[in-house]
Length: 73
Ligand code: SF4
Image (tube, rainbow, N blue to C red; front, side, top):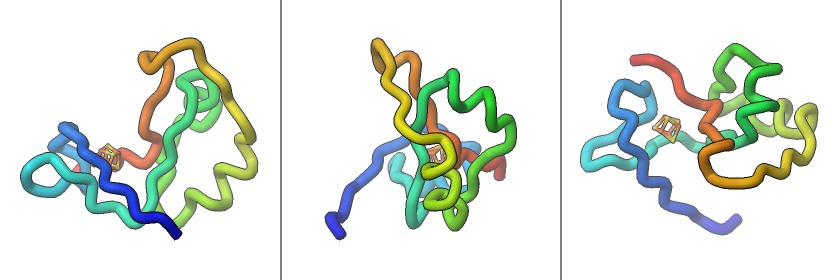
């Protein structure tokens, strides 16, 4: 699988790493609307299961998306 570097500035997340990197094995990005249907965070090991449940979620712009893998340190 293709490797992707995720830069993230949310430094109070459990997966945040020094110099603003995301250290999670996988993360789930979805629309804010879909995210509201899943009020709990989606931890890295759960992403494959939840992403199939959510399905495809088009948005109009980047402000309508969010990381659902955020977990407070
Ligand atoms: S899981 Fe999401 S919020 Fe947390 S460091 Fe990675 S990209 Fe940022």
